[in-house]
Amino acid sequence: MSAEEERPVTIYTVAERAGVSIATVSRVLQGSTPSSPATKAKVLDAVRELGYVPLRAGRATALRVEQHGLVLYSLGGPYYSELLVGYESRAPEFGQSVSLISTEGIEAVEDRVFDLAAKMDGMVLAHGTTSDEVAREVARRVPTVLLNRDPVEGCAGVNVENRRATEELVIHLLRDHGHRRLLFAGDPDQARDAAHRHRGFLDALEAAGLDQAGPPLRALFGESQAAEVAEAVVADGHLDALVCANDELALGVVLELRRRGVRVPEDLAVTGWDDVMAARYTGLTTVRQPAREVGRMAAQRLHDLIVRSSTDSDEILVPSQLVVRSSCGCVERRDN
Image (cartoon, rainbow, N blue to C red; front, side):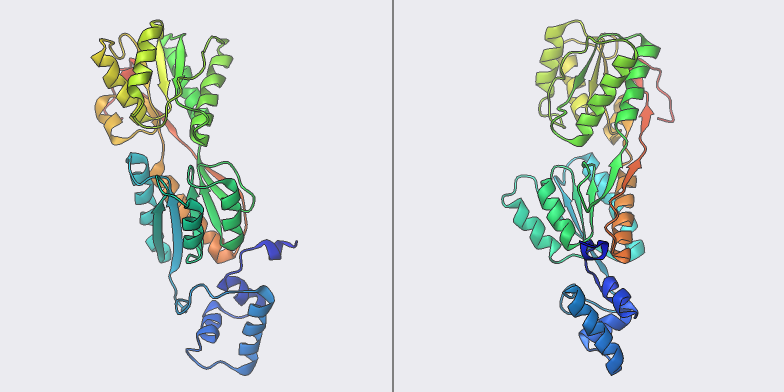
């Protein structure tokens, strides 16, 4: 199969094949203004050769709005809120209209996603929403960007740098606080993010010559299992620091530990990941995930793919940043 055959066919592809502008293609397909017989023939020939189906009946105009489909696992929680703010802040610059669905708790996810894709010029699929097989099929139909997911053939990617930042966090606990018994709380099998953060945790311990880290305390993102994690920490009784896979889990664990008489950071250092607003007011040492920037980059990336009719599958890594506060034992800095 040629590279051209693999590309999603859009109005831009037709214009390129016919050697005319997208405005001319739109006028021919809509019949809104007369076109010369030669121009009309070139456009219609390109449509037939490429098997192009007009984006949506009656919607293609000379200055048409790009229709973006955004598929997220959830609409709750600070991460998704920040992501949406970032996406919506960038989209108007390109005249993009965004349609959004959440897959949390719904049945027939595949049907919902395919139905949305049939109405869109491009799709963004976040982690935890669809299988790789579904993502691959969506990418055959329209340009597709994946968020915080492993690569899938035909899809572009926008991901946060997780591994190096977590390694830096753990090195801080080892070098600057002298901690030696650390444990990771989170489920590496839950998502790419958790897996890469766990890998960074292990990288730091291995580099320091420490190999006594036990298996992770498996817990989902969020605070739902904070009590179970706190119970396990208390039962262990010898930990120096707990590295949580995200802030919501960490904040919940801190609360549960305090209820059990464990002082943070005097008895145990606790860290998170994301830098949600609550982390800033509770002194949680964490890693700042640039969720807004991820949203902005995703909007830009999808626009570029639609305009270029490209199947560029390069991955963009958005850097993250260690933020030290009092929950690891550091003196709070006012700029954090």
